[in-house]
Image 1: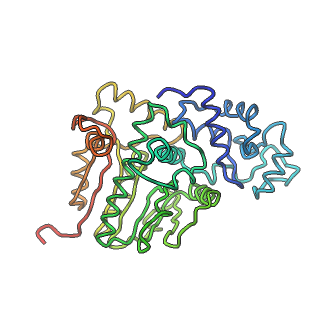
Image 2: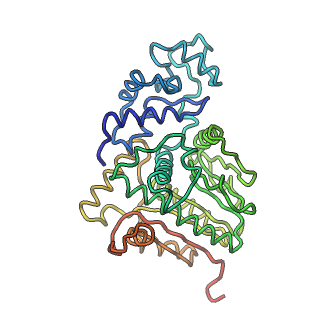
Image 3: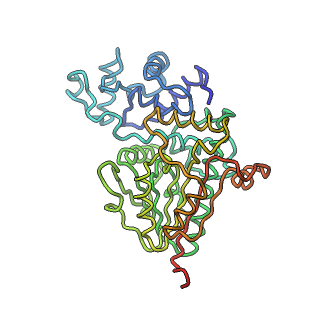
Length: 377
């Protein structure tokens, strides 16, 4: 992916800083990380230069160094502003030692790739008018005008993200019509379904890291989006806790698992899928990537370049599947109804492209369902 121009990068940095909620901070490095995939750039020093030269019109005081130091030359004003927003500082307004922010911004910040996916969903609303997937909350919750996503080389990923969400929510609607009353959103990020849920009888459980949930709740408050009574937050630090210890699935449950599987280790994927498969009448929708070795050189180079970008921000791709092998694994776990859409099926259904060859490798989204009916029963 080509880098954005220097001026476009300045604008992206300022838009992101504008979106940092009151009472939260980010480091220069975290700002760079959050924009790395879209921009092709990743330099904390460059972000610092941009803030020093152009940051006067945004909440500049919410960006600090990785060690918690205030913006140089404006330490006293930054301390006063952060204290007024409830950010705990060592030594109060006068400061104390080199690190002054007690809970540095890695706490309360979203996954970088989750923020990226939210930008693409919001951009689809503005660029294509939500023609594939309509979400009136996508732009407000983001808090950043996502116009940088208009670049032509980002169109494919933007439409894939819109299509996978549309596919998932269409499958969920069918499940609700068939009596499902529990939705579990795994790795919810900035997903907005729970806040526009049209079915009062459907209870939604958002599962994510506590830091991502803290950032999301701050964004919801800033955007004036109400948290419905049908929603339960399930904070899980997967480094220390098991999802099985925090979540009780009903006999019939739908699991939304988008933008997560490629980043899991195979062991992490197996553990989560085992929990889903243990639910008698479960359904799950997730997306997955095919291995680079299955692709022609040009596609392989593009996939490896994107994998390198997400790895550079600390969220590498770890797990790949071939469609036939994945289908066999899911059937072995009791999922007897599978719908797998690859590039050709997605293009024909939503992109107006029936000419894409059926064996074209690329991103897939799959819906797997356990009907609860025993073979021969």
